[in-house]
Image 1 (cartoon, rainbow, N blue to C red):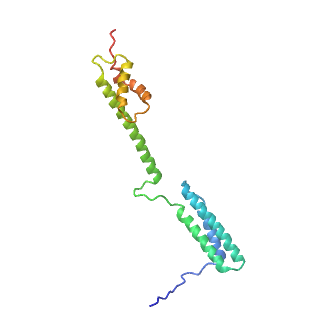
Image 2 (tube, rainbow, N blue to C red):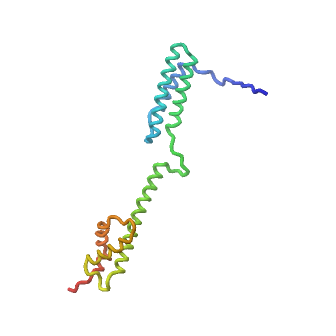
Length: 184
């Protein structure tokens, strides 16, 4: 059993020059970049160059009266321009309503904020340990407090920039109050 293919012409086909004019007008509208995405720009540049080249080849073939070849190149140009039309407003697909850039920005801020929260919690923990280890009358001097600080921080994995954190710790009111009270 063979199937028979039937095609029905729904509208009158355009002339070659009419089709070229329409494609050139579409290329002028949809060719310019309206995206900051470098990958999209790169791919759009390739399609734009391809469309220009195909239009030129179609025009050349039409001038030599090779109409079938000219229409072939024109279809190639139309495909490249169709890509430009479709990709001009394309955005990264995501489940929620935020775009990729907003999502990355929001999540990046969370990470930075979380680091600050963790650092503050660690500083509070070290301060509590120093206050708990303080002698009954308070620390004699900064050197004694620093020795205990070094003992505590030596046990913490990946503890960096100890000197800067030491200076910040010394500025805390609760640490200042833990020093030996001098009689006046």
